[in-house]
Length: 150
Image (cartoon, rainbow, N blue to C red; front, side, top):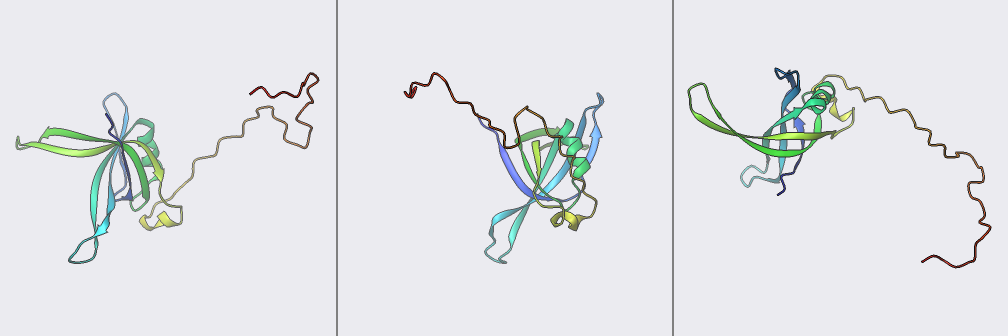
């Protein structure tokens, strides 16, 4: 079975970061996603407002670097949840459980919603011991018989 969803849209509000009773971070926000087609009567694109829930490190990441108006690409799975409202009525809601969240715009494009943006620090380069200059990196084989092995 496959339950995979990828959405691209703008945050309708700043992510709300909370913690469960055990201390697990969880962030919720809504994404405004334009439909691919225009309506017949007005010629405008309809917009869907989709609830997103992110857990753990993804929740902390989105609450730290995303604000209202930023473009985001969300990859995750669709989850349907049944619940009871305050009046005792049975309700059902659909939400996307985010597994990965990516920036959908550049810093300049995303400034429309306010807030500041700081790119995470790039990891330090790793030295794998590979020569980096013009050193001779290849040695001639002494026992080469000229036959290819394939």
